Amino acid sequence: MYYIENEYGKMRILTHENSDFAKKAFCYTSKLGVYEFGKMILDNMSGIDEYILIVTLSGSGVVNIGNTSVKALPDSVTIIPPNTDYSYRTSVDCYEWSHYLIQVGGSAVQPLFDTIIKNKKYTFNIHYAVNSITTIVDNILDFDFSNPSEFEEECSAELYRIVHLIYKGYINRIPSADSLSQITQIILKYVKNHYREVITLDDLSKRCYVSSAHLIRVFRDEIGLTPYNYLKQYRIDRSKELLRYTVLSIKEIAVLVGFSNASNFIKQFKSIEKVTPDFYRSTAIQTNL
Image 1 (cartoon, rainbow, N blue to C red):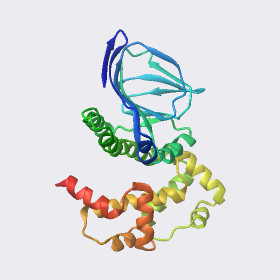
Image 2 (tube, rainbow, N blue to C red):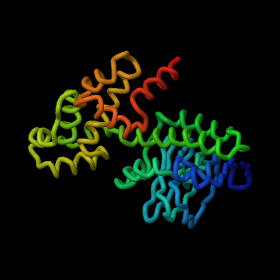
Image 3 (cartoon, helix red, strand yellow):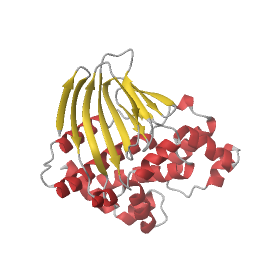
Image 4 (cartoon, rainbow, N blue to C red):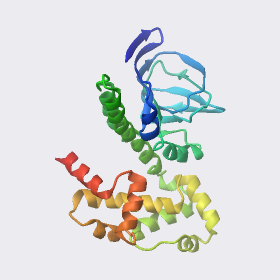
């Protein structure tokens, strides 16, 4: 941990050399910091084999990712892929830029962020999650670093919370209804009203009077997910409400949200939430105490 204060601003930065085990088994970071910049620029950064997350708290910055330039606004996250040339600076119309910079890697991280980056969504708003991320970052910076293995294990759990908050923000972002195509609006409404039932791609295509390929392309461009993955995510979100606020069994919840059986529900829940429904329920109960 070290602190820097100079003409560019203030920085509080944690660096860590991760063990080979942590890199294989955990979600890990080699650098995490709180930055309060004035007018500054960093150029020609490259060769970093982790994802770089920039969570803007106040002010604004400009981030160049390869040949793409994006603006980092308050309550947003910017994701830079591994091994990518990038630079960033405070916006010319702003005199300060306060943000977190987190380098994060691990097998659990890659599929989530690759889904976002594949759709060229380098930056988006996460206003709902910034307070939680602030708490998590403060927790990590306050960890005891004297035992590296314990630090890596505890840090992994906290980092994954950040990764998951960001991913959830991406897949749940829904543009205003009037900006969506009629195809997407029909699908969203139909899923909301019929998610407990069997829904096939053919059903949706017939309702929208378009081919399956065209339907998938339009919906994915606007929502960031295929109709199937959106339906699965919607069902999982509804199941989480039932897990939190009811005493229904896993089997009952599976049927209520549209899964064919408890086994499939558990499998799909774990693929998205990275924990079992039982574990999610027990953790939610403890959190609400």
